[in-house]
Length: 91
Image 1 (tube, helix red, strand yellow):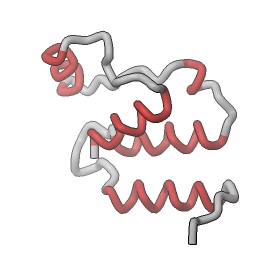
Image 2 (cartoon, rainbow, N blue to C red):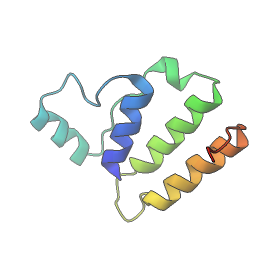
Image 3 (cartoon, rainbow, N blue to C red):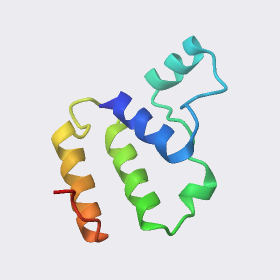
């Protein structure tokens, strides 16, 4: 699930998480509980899609795996947010 949060981060920001870090350095940061910074332009956004994406990313990035959201929980959250925002399912 942590990696899915990275995918969502890339979709949201257009950047790879820890893009400027060497792979080994990024791994050490992750193990230490650090997470990639979400750019301030997204943090301060009032766009409901941005807000929902950030929440989904945070659900995936909870440090302790047992407390981290499951794939089903993230899917349900995203589905509920899309419905709340009036996005219709393709039939």
